[in-house]
Image 1 (cartoon, rainbow, N blue to C red):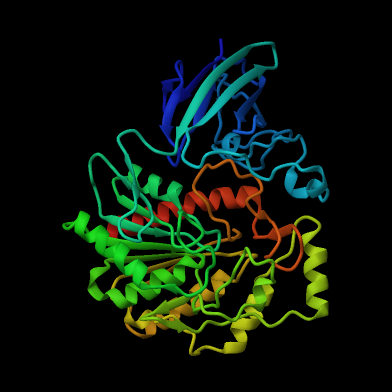
Image 2 (image 1 turned 90 degrees about the vertical axis):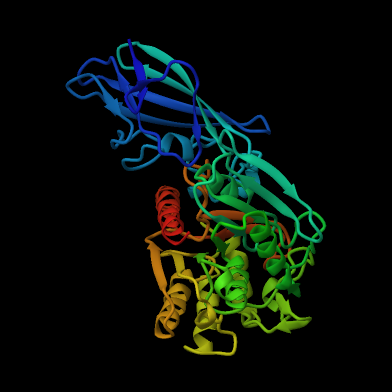
Length: 450
């Protein structure tokens, strides 16, 4: 009789655990050397069944550990205990290798509420006829975490507060995707940190355009956190374009911020953009940020000529998509080592951790993080750099079902084409491992500094 274990505990009723927590499953009750297939199924909100499978061979004791490398017929490569969760697909083929999926309408990621529990049905079939089924629920919002909409003054976001506080409070900022990064904030709360996922554009009644956004808005959010949690250290976690707001705010706040974490960051201030205008984003010359009513000028890409436009269109119409990183690298290198757009890291009093992606396809975050940290260290700042080798720009939360996390589908406005694929870099397996690495590095840094 096959039995499933997690951390040496038998799985009989649905196994419920927080989403970022590691999970190593073990099957027992097999014949020595017998092969067994394990399939996971996740049904999304659109009614699409997303599935992953792996086949293993039992060892001499008749057991299989799911962190061992599966046989070649599996839906993911390498030894990955979480492969059955992040590699789910609605299609037998690997989506990232299909050039025609735009025409067929195959989704790149499941249609899911970002905070709803993920309910996986697991089914095992052994070579000699044995079958068994289990259920695993991975919670995005852990038990005891309180969720509160924040609508104080002009602030808009969601606060996630643990029942028992074990650490500080974190202001969490997303990037050019807009909205509020609630899933990351909820996961931080599962580790004892209060976390405010702040929406600063394209969220609620906040501006729809990422243009002329006042940095005082972030000051208000930090003041709100300090008033609510007066005896806790405060950190800012800013991702991608949010890294600019994070560093600019920390520099302005002085010793009121105890830690600054920058994920796939820039080292300079970049110009704003308007995804809803229908215009090429790289033509925008307006500032994204302002302080005291005065815009902060940002660097911008060169106006794309005919050759670049043709390259973009061709790249975005076929997998694996177009990489904007070379355009950004060219623009950033043109500015040289020091420019008027440099982010003021020398004015930051808190420890700084920059986490970059080694194969970032959107912009060269490794180049930026190296430049930023090098400048910070030279100015006496406690600045550090961690590289997620081989990973792409879309570093999500651990174990999320995102098999095409190195691709994203945009509607009109991003690059002058109606719709297309942007290659964010990395590969599904590398990005999945990088998400877990990033999460642990970030937690270690926050535990040390807060």
